Length: 191
Image 1 (tube, rainbow, N blue to C red):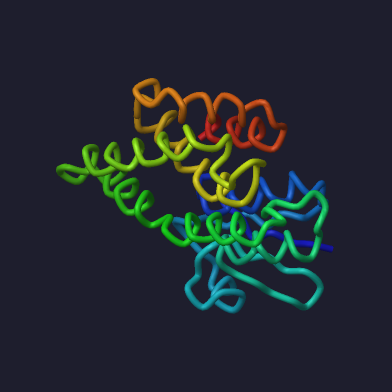
Image 2: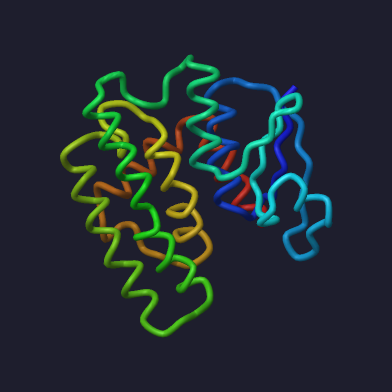
C-alpha cells in the first residue's frame, strides 16, 4: 500500500496527488500540519518537508523525484515522452522550476518587486505553450504537473491575471478538464 504524507496547501504535495490520480493509484493519506510538524516526520524526511511517499518499507521524499519514481514504477499511462529528446527537454523544464517558484514564494510573502519577478516568468511559459500543446511536449505529463499547482495558486489565491497570457490561460483551461486537475482546483478553492 502507498502512503502519502501530505498537506493540502502544499503545491509540492499537489504534484504527487496529481500523478497518483493520473495513474489511478489508491493510497492512504497522512495529513501533516505544516505549522506544527510532528517530530516523527523528520524520521521520514530529515528536512521535515512533505510530500513523502512510503510504499511498504521504501520511503522517498522530493516531489519531482517521487513523480518520476511513480512514472517508472507504474508506467501506464506514461507521463514522460517516449522520445529521449522530448523526455530530456521535459526534465530540463522541471529542473529549472525554481525560476518560477522563487518569485512565487516572494510574491506570497509580499516582498517588494515580487509581482514583477513572478509575472516575468509567465511569458516564457506562454511562449513555450505556443510551440507545443503541453509543457511536457505533445502530451500531458510531468512538466505540466511540475508547474500547474503554482499557476493555480497564483491565479486563485494571489490574483495573478492569466488572461494576459492567452496560451497559458488556455493550457490551464484545458488541463482543468482532467479529473486529477479538477480535484486539485477543488483543494485550492477549499483553502
